[in-house]
Length: 255
Image 1 (tube, rainbow, N blue to C red):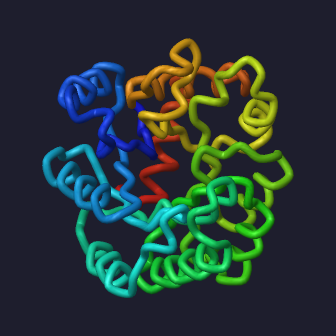
Image 2 (image 1 turned 90 degrees about the vertical axis):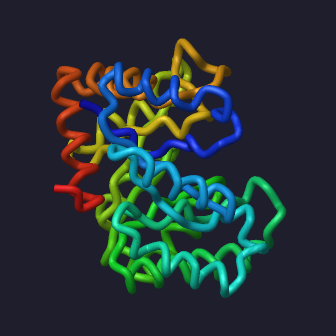
Image 3 (image 1 turned 90 degrees about the horizontal axis):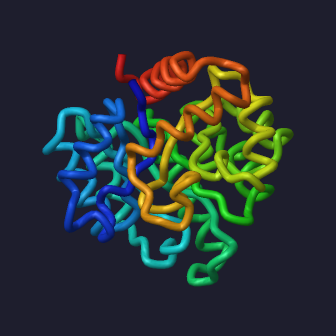
């Protein structure tokens, strides 16, 4: 049984065959997943999906690329949605210095506001990081995000920073890139980070694992991520599946 902790089944790429995608996931052994919403439309769709399927949960937050668009009304809406019985986390949130739509100071302000909200409503957070590692770690420390913990989503950094994040009460989540032949860092992280701090995800429809690289990703492919981690750690696939399932249930308080 597998838990895909980060899917975007609320994306346009799934509008024509969503039911088939969900069926393939179940056939592959994916018994639970979290649909992540990051703006008005994707959050609304995430809530619809978690209400429609017993095994789907939602996370709601504001993406750093769109930080400039977030209003106080949006923040109040996130607070309201956090009480939904199937909303298990806030996010994805964080910093993205690759795209320049939202100025860095606005991204940081929106990030801090969401961390404070998470602490208020006692939900873990899902971190989006693109070319902003030092600032993200600094803000997590300053805002004492360790009180709620969360996920370093689709982690691509070094083993050293991963260990620092674990110290801050965060899980390291690995996706498709860990299966790429030339992806040195994710493989090192998979080998080095204790199994009780690892999670698996697809981030579908993005970052499909080998041999589907470059194609649309989907939740059924998370099995390939688990298999690769098992190989790198010298464990069985079943051991990785069970541990990452238990880690996700613990983090999202689903036991």
